[in-house]
Length: 166
Length: 175
Image 1 (cartoon, rainbow over the protein chains, first blue to last red):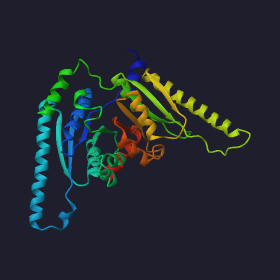
Image 2 (image 1 turned 45 degrees about the vertical axis):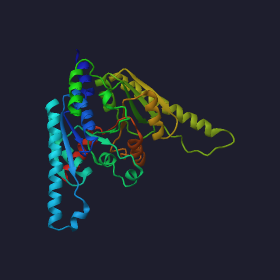
Image 3 (image 1 turned 90 degrees about the vertical axis):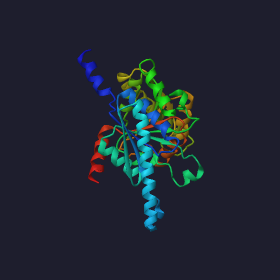
Image 4 (image 1 turned 30 degrees about the vertical axis):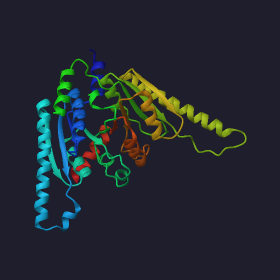
């Protein structure tokens, strides 16, 4: 390989070292993560699963019982995330779980910045009219804030990334 | 476990068929002042050894129709210039990844056209290059970006070039 080839190789090589996968712990999450792993394997990247817990707004006016319930709910979510990460680590060891509380798009982009993530992978599955109307889908919000490339994929059985293709 | 089965399948296939992207579609704004960044698209196409299709959009200049047909002359001239620009980008990209092909749309950015073309090509990925300096969603309006993300069955990669990425990182860390 001559000098020019080496320079060209350096300029065109795509480096993905850290991939941040935003999961909402729904039934779609596993497929999103599987898809992200297929990319991570290609580039030898490490995978960070992030789940942002959003406390319900009604909690602001609740009493002590409400806080106890919320804490339980939060712990449940954290446990589910750790379990998911554990299942993935069995097949892909370079995987970690990150659990944070707050606004999903803000937290995902903040963590992406902190980790210097090279890619954020987000699944999209709020396809109902109401979902669109109330902008429940986080993907566009993350996209508008993120400093790194964002990969949004159809998180749907009918999508081209159905199980069989993986 | 479903996910473990999928991961086992993936790891078994590793090395035998590592490719999952065969067609990559990248949108290109061909208007005069647009900054075009095709680094991510070409790097991805090179990595996956995929065909890279550059879908160029160019809006027609606003000129009033007149009886002498001068407006047609202006439109044709503008379309020709846009096509030349598209070929320039294709040739630039071909220096890095040879299998790059042009697709020209003689109108302004249209989400439906992107989705339709992606379907027709059976694209595995749509790469939308976006730059901070070109008003981030100047070429790709916010509404259009959302529409593309909502409607496309093909995964969409919104590529941010390294320069604006660093600037955004600084802003984010400042917060």
